[in-house]
Length: 356
Length: 178
Image (cartoon, rainbow over all chains, first blue to last red; front, side, top):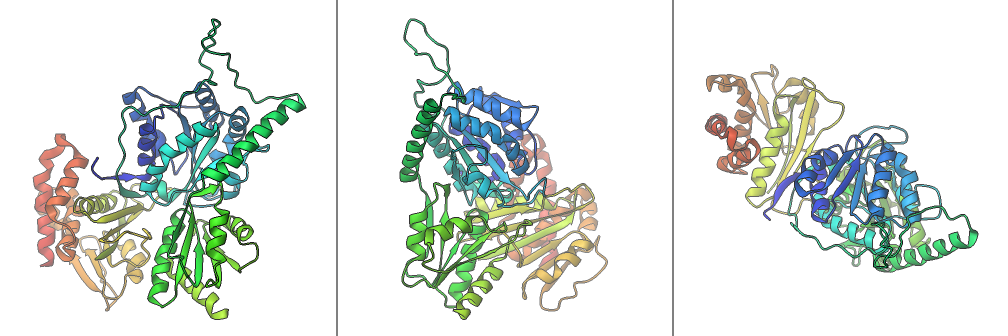
């Protein structure tokens, strides 16, 4: 397919359809409304189902139902709406129901604003809802990358029977970039013998139950042991990270999403000023690329690192855990949806390096 | 070549469309492009702007804080963004709507009476295409025909009859600069 100039939200929606998503349930909120709008037009064309639910909670529970029946199902929202979905996400994790949740982050807490933000890092990567679970979290930094990640998100959800979150900032949803979508009229779906598709008493299809209530201690413990083993597998197999000009760098920037692109521009400005600065960009925020981040920042040549976020500092905690005190890690960022410019980031790096 | 542009004006003047057409035309000519709208609780008659980048190289940051060209359709936009333009950059002013001059002396200012020219062509709605033509006439970053190709995709065949008017508008705009 030739390149097409697409808005992020629309490209994500189309990429989900190409990945075999046939059920979309959502509730409006800016800045992600173009996703349900696009789905409402496209789903009927591919024989899928679009439904505007009566609330966010209803939407995520419809995803739970469709996912539990074995379909590829998705919902999308933006920060305050994602908070409302947490109960359902926790239920999906407990019931081992695969699904994809897109969060176009806006400013928070509370209703906040509608501009781009990265304030939901903790919520997405550390649980979000109650209970001892994790979601796989992808953080794309361009519209093309978002599209490329969608089939992977559905595959990962199915493979590990887990909710998967696409954590993007509002800018990714609102901006337009040329994208090349891999069109796939007939995506192959994995077998899901566990899905609730009707019990065949003659024995062809075993009885399937989707449930998140495990009253007996031993039975809940079985589930948790199983989930934990699965999370270990995910940690081993699913880490994605980009390193940019980090080999032998004097300094390292750490960022994800749109901010990582601003950091790349800062790397260019710093190179023009004779400073060898690199960038490490986690693509999966969970599992977090701790080893890769450590190995880049702990290099002999590196004096220190600076984490840049559109928040008051969230991912920086995981960066510091990964580096484990071997090098100083500083933070730059603001919570009010204000994105630092490349020049400001470069200035900050030069100040830190002069001080050292 | 890296073009970092801000298009700005009142909502309804077609500034977002100008930017989209430029980004789409750049893509069709094999360049890397990006388009970011201002978005918020905005309305017709309020202010709107978009940032458009065109580059031969991969676009790192798509955010435009220091534009190489500023294209303004109304006075508040000129006042808001004038200082951000890089020295040696260009400012395109819709002189039909803006009764002040560019204060900066280190940039190139072009005054384009968009509404007058569009009215001469019989439709003041193509004011934005006059302005886009002026920008392309100066920057030469895309071909007018490629812009029209992008416009046709946007309009659909049903409205293809509007293409000749828009071609004329782009050409007249470009003619203002030469």
